[in-house]
Figure 1: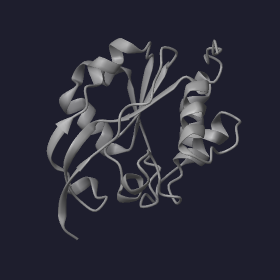
Figure 2 (figure 1 turned 180 degrees about the vertical axis):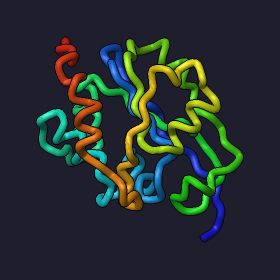
Figure 3 (figure 1 turned 45 degrees about the vertical axis):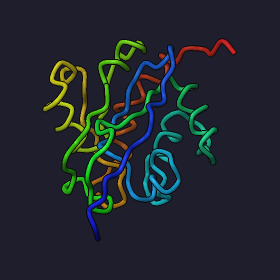
Length: 167
């Protein structure tokens, strides 16, 4: 596979986002569908739906509505980079996301990092937020150590903090 310059996606958040889930950078499949966790084998959407007692959202608008309804902001630490395929290990020449901008725009109480690379990048580039961050096992299909139970234990306390939407 060749190394390519690739860009990620804008953050999904609103004024009621209480938790931020940070990934490292979108996979090839996600970039193909132009939205987060687009690989059908990735366990992200199924896991979140299970934790929040909802159906798995089917399309991008449904996913955004789900996130807003649950008080979840979603973004990646890397805005753009040179990458080979979907390999986090191959990420080079990074342009970072403006995480402080999002943190000032939304009342984030907790950050959950989807995997080790996201957590490491957050700690390296945004150490001011590492104390409010927790590393969760990557939902990637390439991660044999994934545990939905770990995600459930981490996120469940935030189900009750969901704010009602005013629309």
